[in-house]
Image (cartoon, rainbow, N blue to C red; front, side, top):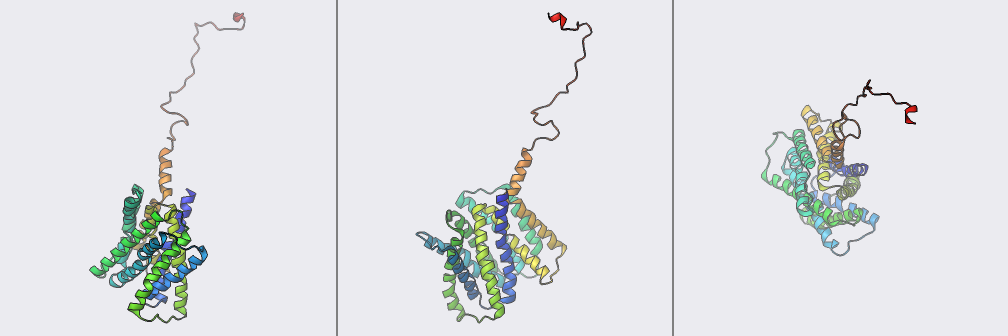
Amino acid sequence: MEGNFRWALVAAIAPIAWGSNYFVTKQLLPADHPLYGAAIRALPAGILLLLLSRRIPQGSWWWKSAVLGTLNVAAFFVLIYAAAQLLPTNVASTIMATSPVVMMLLAWLLLADRPKLLHLLGAALGIGGVCLMLFSAEAPARPLGVLASVAAMLMSSLGYVLAKKWSSGIDIMALSSWQLLAGGIVLLPVAMLFEGAPPALDGAALWGFGYVTIVATALAYVAWFSGLRHLGAGSVGLIGLLNPVTGVLLGTLIAGEALGAQQAGGLLLVLAGVLLGQPVAAKLLRRRRARPDESSPRGSTGPVESIRPVAADPARPKSSLRSRG
């Protein structure tokens, strides 16, 4: 139980870092160069992890890294940016909140990992909580933005499940570095084609890219794929719901946004859903069911009759030591 809880905490680093990434990107990074921003985020993080792991892909891992890098890094970063430009944040975040359910279904299809009831209940609570936190009728949802957000959610969910399927025995740091490098290499020529010269970076942007590269990418990806290896896709998918929770809390603590009763209730629902879907919750439930009924004596297997002292028969002669002669 302690081991599962520890890996759940490790996996939680990723969505918390990704939630903070929105704030850093909006405040410090150039907004008109999303492709270069994604490439600059991915490539240095991949190089850093490659230097730490000192391992290069072998055999089939050359094309597997390209597939995972495209799904989890290149396409995902671009589609998320497009969704952020075309949709209100609440709508985009609500669509992404359905990722745990999609991950469970894909894991069932590709890994024969059948969804558990607690995971489904946790997903229902989490999605409901995200809707309470973020949903409002501020602006209409543009179909192209919805399509981009759904595509990002589907691609990342598929990429995470494939990473779990393929990565048995592969060093997590090396696995993360290969994906980030592959995604960055795909992004760089696309950025040069559509955005021209790289953006000029001031001191604030350099600090921002430093945080995004080291914390929100390198550390976050290692933590996320470590959690996927040691926990099921359902459990890790639910942990991903901490992403919008982090965004709401940062908006309240740093940007001074108000946290209303509806948002607070939604936040509690999300946290309840995340906890409900973890292995610790299932073990506690099984332990509670296996606990014997405290109202019956310990060790008894059925009803116990009361024991009463037998009254002495006055007609029966008393025995004595002399009569045994």
